[in-house]
Length: 92
Image 1 (cartoon, rainbow, N blue to C red):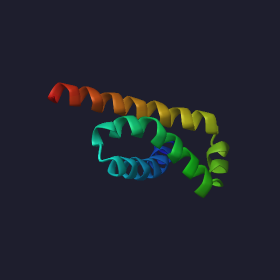
Image 2: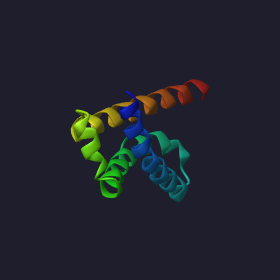
Image 3: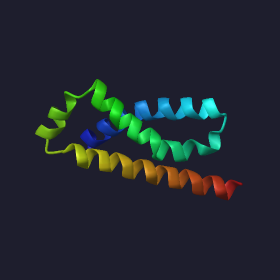
Image 4: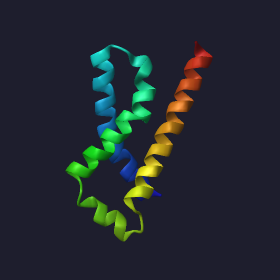
């Protein structure tokens, strides 16, 4: 489980950078969860593949495929975004 969270945090490092930049560019932080769970996730995965492509051998040796790792990241990000959206609606 530690390995999955390492990959998750590495991908979301890039994801948060892109999501914050897009939100600042459009001055709309209400779209932050949507961007985080969709475009940001794909840009984070793409950036991880570009900068840390060799780490996929490490994950593959532990039995994790790219598809499985990316599916887990996408699932967690959508889940977190739904929770943030529901909390925002309850507060509003």
